[in-house]
Amino acid sequence: MSIEIDKLTKDDWQSVRRIYLEGIATGNATFETEAPDWESWDSTHLKTPRIVARRLDELIGWAALSPVSKRQVYAGVAEVSVYVAANAQGIGVGRRLLAALILEAERSGIWTLQAGIFPENEASIALHRGCGFREVGRRERIGKLGEVWRDVILMERRSPKVP
Image (tube, rainbow, N blue to C red; front, side):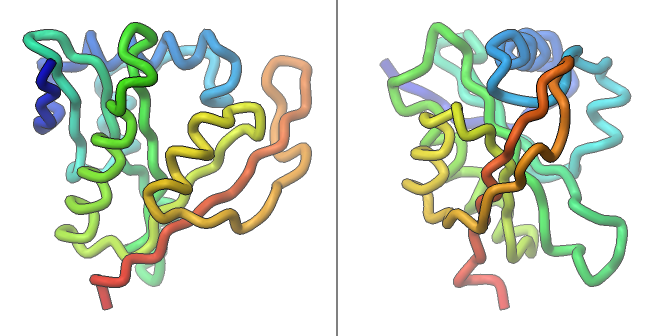
C-alpha cells in the first residue's frame, strides 16, 4: 500500500491531534499530557517543514520542527517531532517521515536537528539512529511526567549539506 508524504496544513489538525494524543497516551512519547489547540501548536513550530504521511485518504503520521532558541546563533538548530498512528506503526512510516523532514530541513537551512527521547522508547531511538542521528548523552531526571522523574536521551544530526 502506497504511503504519500505531503505538507501538513491546518485542515490536517484534527488527525494530527488524534495521533499526538495516541503518543501522549503511551507515556513514552512526550512530557505533554494534553494536545494543544491549533493556534498554540502552530505558534510553537516552525512554519516549514511540517509534513504528514497518508495511506489512501487516511493521515497516519506527522513530523514537524520546533526552534530550540530565539537567539539568532541557533537559527539553524531545531527539535524534531515525529508521530505515527498506532495502526500504522512498524511499516516504515516513521522512517519515511523523518527522512523527508531531514531533506526539507536542509532545504530550509537547518544545520542541526535534535531529539529528546525517553530511553524506554527504543523504537524512536532506533529510528533516529537509522536516519543518521547520534546519541549526545543522557539527561537524567530532566523533567517529571506526572509525579515520575524521567530521563531523556539527547540525539542530534548535523547536516553535511548545510554549511
